[in-house]
Image (tube, rainbow, N blue to C red; front, side, top):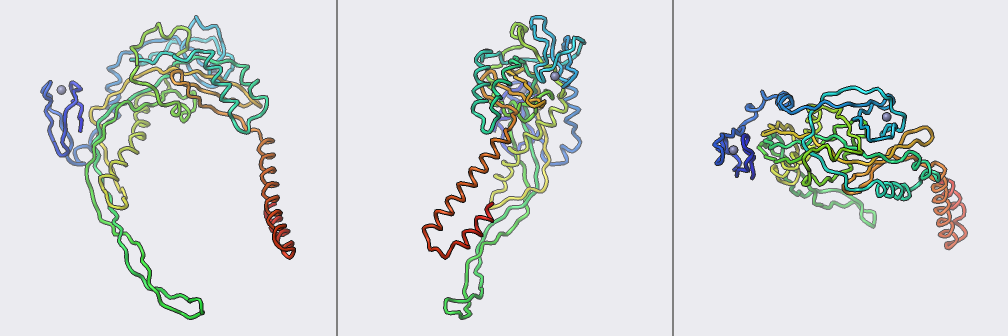
Length: 374
Ligand SMILES: [Zn+2]
Ligand SMILES: [Zn+2]
């Protein structure tokens, strides 16, 4: 198992149960907690906040949308004065905002015309969408945005308590009636589970847990733009930013860490289940120590196309590295109703055909069945 040195980051080899791991490169003594008591007092939010205060900060001129609240950097090279998130006119009121400086970014790879095509193709592929949707979606154009994200790295040590379930079979006697109507006694095999209490420690290594730091777009859709080729992150350089807007983060790093903890839950619980073994597992408690916790503020390129349909706002987002499209969409209730009716007519047709094939005595039954379906 690889353990990152808390001082120099070197990858050390680690055996579970080790309490003190001395780094062979810098000599730092990494302390690995051995019991739940070791970690109860630790304050991870405080640790993150302390790291945050050490980060280099930047002061940008931003414009805030009065309608949706999105806050993006002002770039005099962009002529559009429309909010990239909600298509309402942007106010001209600028203000200065202090933020952590982004460390790195992924430059735009998908061009604007390509993004436009991907957007329209996506709309074409939608089932039960209103007919004039494409025309409407085209009205507001498409905007290139650098979206703020946090990435978190951590080596976690988790103590758990739970139960291991082991299956066994028993023979059960039961009474039933045979084909002649006689009461008979028979036996059958029944599966049962025996539960044993257990506890243990599991280790996970998390690298680049990606958390959207924007609240202007739906969190779920931003998450679904993954995967990102984070291996190609380039050092933050203003040359890349020209012609695009950059959103300021609204979700701070401490809150971002809360979301990262949620994302770490599933892999940790999977590891616990594997550790418990047996046929079934129950997890009663977990307590996690986040070792070598570090974060980065990065920018990722997204094409956004906002449009209104029946007064409601819809947004399509495109991962400007992979071309992955995610979006909100309107439904055509006329089309859905027609489809449901068509399906009903088909079902009734099939029933009629079946009964036509059988004898005439069944017409009453057919009538009853058709009424039920309707
Ligand atoms: Zn070291
Ligand atoms: Zn807006």
